[in-house]
Length: 486
Image (cartoon, rainbow, N blue to C red; front, top):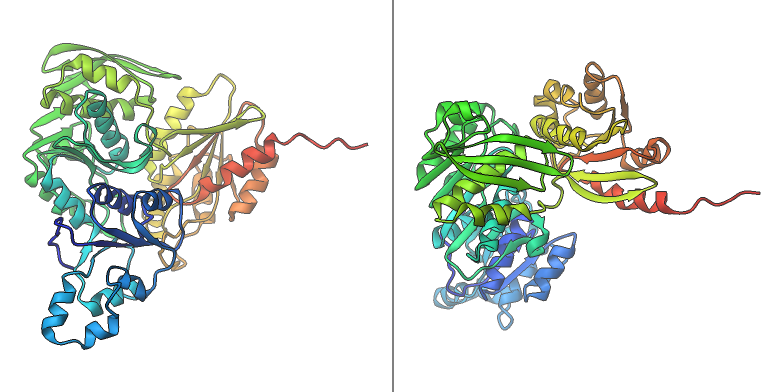
């Protein structure tokens, strides 16, 4: 794939424009008044929003979609034209943007190749945008979306008017992207497919490093190598030394830690984890800055906030401005998101899909739960490769749950090689928590929950797949008045 981006007015066409990462890029390009089109097999509220901004959305991925920017020239005629005419026509052909999910069998991809369109990975566009701004890129195995959203929100509240691209939707800017007028850009930088190495931000952040994508990396060492290349491209690197890998394998320019004894540049004392949020006294190089109050729960979000504090201070913000902004940050969607309540049952949606994330999310749920309130963890494993690689780690991740309800593995496009199943994971979990039930399909899991959940339960839906689609119907069904029988 080519990696040369033209922001001068040449069109962009996204294959799979509705994805969370693709749509954020499309939003920013559209707001920059560039011609944008895209296709997606499943139109959603994100594609509708892009369409309202002027992007042209196709509901099918077909070869002739590429003709959209050539209204007066037939594709066959272009291919049969003289070299001079062909060269002139190609300057109007769109730059075609793909994610890793798009393969060579895709009809639009084949058409783009045949026409000679520049074909780019979404990370190429993000890298070009990062290079175009005073950029802050947040990387790490866990916490990227929350940390990048937190930083973007803090800068927005401080009046710095940033452009923001994150891997989740945030209420404050009503989506996964925001176009600002200042030189600042805050972006979530993904390591899942190795494309992290393309980014060279002015400020880079590493929240933590673990093996999370065994479909791309075979070992943790390969993951570390990717992050090291990213770190070398950052003018300033901010890193959490609570992660042993970051502490031992990297030399952050600015460090942060929840443990004052580690000697980090930013740390905290007087921590109070509560059911309604978190407070802590923040220190900067041995000097107390002041009290930080968060609406977010548990230690992992306090750690994320320290990264935001470090960025804010690096950009010259007073701690009071930082604290005021972070105090009203409500978090991103699907990050311990309250979805509703019915018959006294609280429904929470969370994206956690790695053993470390599940442990942290369940610890936060246990913190919020009232005495005697059950924490019911409903989990959909994500990818066969991840489930197989971390089977034992997953098995030990549900100790904070009073009941675990497990459904089958969401493939995310992977082939089922018959090596692991949801039942295998249920059997493994039962060795650590005997209160586990396996329901292989979403319909069965809904039926089971309707019969099993009881008033007072905290129902926590976990996973990166489509399990959360069951929540609205469950709330609606439970809220319907019972029909009296004579």
